[in-house]
Structure formats: structure tokens, C-alpha cells
Length: 411
Ligand code: HEM
Image (cartoon, rainbow, N blue to C red; front, top):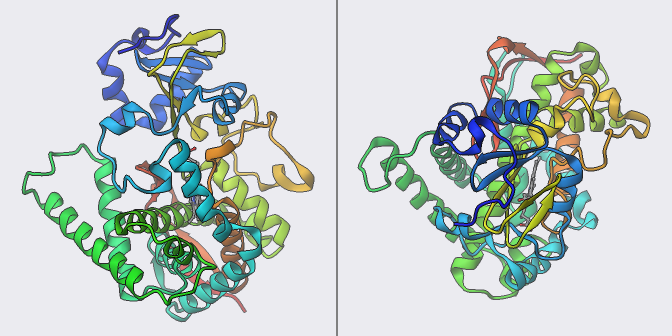
């Protein structure tokens, strides 16, 4: 295995397996501490390097010279669900798949999304009553799954939506807990297997029921291309999953932040403010809290030359909370984004990644979060319940745990 030619500093010299253990216990604290103590290029292990300077982050994410890849050897060696999806592909294969999906996420489809989002909120409000205590993440998950499905597959999911949510929740639980081998008949493993089987069946039904000739949405575009079934299934699965889990997290974190700041809460009806608040919540709580790449040749970063085969960690959580780019970084302050406000460095804010592999659904997600937040806040106030117990769980996405609220209908 290749080793960095001039090793950057890091905890315990960046050479100890205790780093992996500390990371497993508290990934967010470990990464933040490592960057604050050792600087902008930190060795976590001989083949894992954290990059914390926006100059380096921009160079890596915007790379078009093939110095880094997303799906490298390290990723391929690990367990990878849905391997035929665009998100898990590389090179010409990835390019072809991305081009196939791109039209379904263009800005001319955002009006359609807005309609689905308003409709989803209206239905959700019908199930709430004044004084009801809710788990905000559960409610936002159901909402985002419904809205995402209408946008991606052309119709609401009904019962099947619950199946998909359960399967994703099981996958998330496993990705945030020490894993036991899949063949062990533990309760979690049995539950996961069952969830994955139901997930497959729900996807297969969605695919076979799609009316022919419908190709504005992503599922229609995929089917028009007539790829093999596993490819459609993997693509649809990853789109539905990435389309709802991250968005539900972003919405939940936004309500958590706004709940603690009554002044911000009162201004959520102003579209510009709601948009700034959404951006600010994604700064403090970036759903994609770490992004990785793998070097395929020597790479110069921050005065070091890294060899091929090194996994680079780029963490929006770490960089978004760095006082060099955001004054008072721990404070929720939507105002910093008003009137054209920008961070202290153009690559210091990257909740959607950047460059060729940046989020395909970024404009969809932003519009969805803004519309849902503004529409909900015009009808109800979500009164926080025990906000001091809320904490982030860094699974595949940054999950909010313990965000509960009492619904108060306005006027
Ligand atoms: C707040 C919500 C969202 C956040 C924070 C988010 C974040 C991200 C990030 C950081 C990446 C880049 C990962 C990397 O560079 O390795 C990404 C990729 C991607 N996202 Fe999102 N995302 C969100 C919503 C969505 C939605 C709604 C969709 C569409 C249904 C979506 C589809 C994708 C896809 C397909 C990719 C892979 C792109 C590629 O590999 O070329 N995301 N997302």
C-alpha cells in the first residue's frame, strides 16, 4: 500500500490504530480536534488524510485532471450497496449516467417540485392538531419521502413510502453502529435483511407500474434508456434515498435552530430570510458531514506530496465551523447570508460538494427546504421540547436525534 511521501502531522503521528478507535467513538469531535490541533493537512492513518483548508478542498473537488477519484480502490474493497448507480460509478460510465439523469433535475422542473412540496405540507398539516407533540425528524422524513417520490418517480408512494423509510432507517442504524457480520442471525441483521427485501419489492413495483412515455422525471428518463433492471433499481434506490434522507435532516436541523431563536422564527415568512436560514442551518449541520476522494497519483496539498492510494477526507462540518471563514462559527446567524453575504473563502461552504461530482439534486433540495419551511412556518409554530437533549448522529448523513416539538397553529 502506498504511503504519503512526506507525511503530514497528525494525532499520534498519524500512525496509530487508536485514531480509528477514537474516530469511531466521536467522528465529529475527533475530526474537528485533529484539524484545530494539527492544521490543514492531517494524517489520521498512513492512508487517510483530512484536508481542512478551502484552497485544497477546491482543488480536490474541482479536479478535472484525474488526480483524484470518488470511487477508488478503498471504496471498492468495502461493502457497497447499489453498485450500478451513477453515484457509485466512475469515469465514462459515470459521465453517461449523469448525463442521462441531468434533465430531470434542471431548474425548469422546480415549479413542479414546488407544487409537490406545498401539496405535501398541506397533507401533513391535515394530520396534525394544535398541541400535538411530534418527532420532527419522523415527520420531515415522511414529508420529504413523499415529495421526493413525486419529483423523482412521478407519484406518491403511499404504503410503499413507509417501507422505503424503514429500510433506509435500518441501513442508517447499521452505518452508525459497530457492525456484526451480516451472516450472524442477530435481530438487527434479520431486520435489515427483511427491510432490504421489502425495499426491493417496493422498487420493483414502482418500476413496473410506470406509465410508458412518461420521461420528464428521473424514473421515466431511466426507463426510456432501457437499461438492465439492476441498473434502474440501483439508480432509483439511491435517488430516493439521497433525495429524502439528507433533505429531511436539513429540514429538521433548520426547525431545531429556528426553534431556539424566536427572532429568526418570526421572520421565516420572508422568502429571502427563509432561504438564508436554510443555508445557515446547513452550515452548522451539514447533512453530508464528510466527503471522500482517493488519490490516483501524487497530489500536492498544503506543502505536502501525497502518494497514490490515499483517502482524502473533506468535512463540511469541520470547515463550516472554522472561525477563519465564519465569524462566531458556532452561532446560528441567518443574517450572515443576507444582502449577498458570503463566507471568507469561496470554497469554505460546500454542503452540496462542488465540481463535476457535486450534488445533482442541489437546486431541488434547496427549493424543497425553502418552500416547506416557509409554508409550514406560515401555518404553525413548532415549539421545541427539551432542545438541550438534541444531538447529531453522524451516520451516512448527519442525523438529528431528539428533535421534538409541540405544534401550535397560528391565528
Ligand atoms: C439537503 C439535501 C442534500 C444534501 C446536503 C446533499 C449533499 C450532497 C453532496 C455533498 C454530494 C457530493 C458527494 C461527493 O462529492 O462525494 C451529493 C451528491 C449527490 N446527490 Fe445530493 N444532497 C442533497 C439532496 C439531494 C437530492 C434531493 C438529490 C436528488 C434526488 C440528490 C442526489 C445526489 C446525487 C445523485 C449525487 C451523486 C452525484 C455524482 O456522483 O455525480 N441529493 N449530494
